[in-house]
Length: 380
Image (cartoon, rainbow, N blue to C red):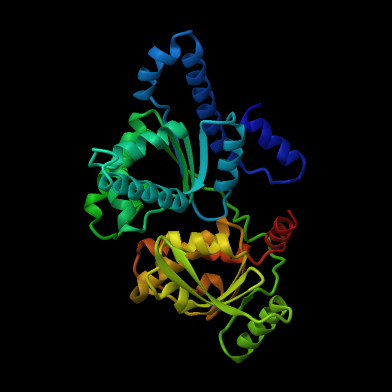
């Protein structure tokens, strides 16, 4: 398979990426992790009875993972994906953290339903959920590790205590250091044990690269329209008319876990919303995941300036953009300001850190490369 450094050097030589000393420093830590995981796999297979005697030992001796944080656009996700490609097939999982937590809550709900039906006598859903996750993958790679939801915050400590005990290795990227996760969140004191558990089981690395590579993709398409007003409305309507191609858009109701999500206008796999439809109502990660699985193009009209007085709406907007970006959805948007001026909160909150990533992604979603990749996906 080769080392991660060898693959990185090949990408540089082919002109696909630029050489970055901060990234190279991080790669040495990734290669250390690859070596330790390889030794662990070999030790498990070194004896015909290794599966019996080694398995129990291994469950309590997981390899320390890696938690990479830093400013947006520095190559964290690219490097984690490169690391993931170096791992042998099987026994690994790569996911956006929001997707993973949606899966965890689904499993918890299914366990509770099974308990109600009398199919299990185990009242606590966390141990069996953690056990099933550990059996599926011994290396978990999470992109954009962030905690904004109190439901997530309340289960993370116990969930990851069980996962680490079962020998799971965590690799994660984030915009913030572990001590800043869930900053100013509701009942944060109950979340603090998770930070300690996390720091005991991962090496923390600050990727302090100089260049925001997303902002270098400056050839942008007219899919982000600002400022708001009559001209912006005309441009959004004109783009929507090209999507309609003479068809009549109709509203739809999408059922998500038994509750309806209203979609005002739908035509040709495209959906059109106002900001309030997506961010001023109590939608969650599962709702945005369901919508992005159903539509490949989103129109979002009238995105306002966000601030400290509208934290819930801001959190939903951040989560929405994370989901659309991760699913590589084409986005047309009309907004009150450019992405870097869209959030104007004055207090240092979780949203202050998170919106830096949101702004960077909104810039990238306008790029020639992003839209070209979207087109290629449609052909496939």
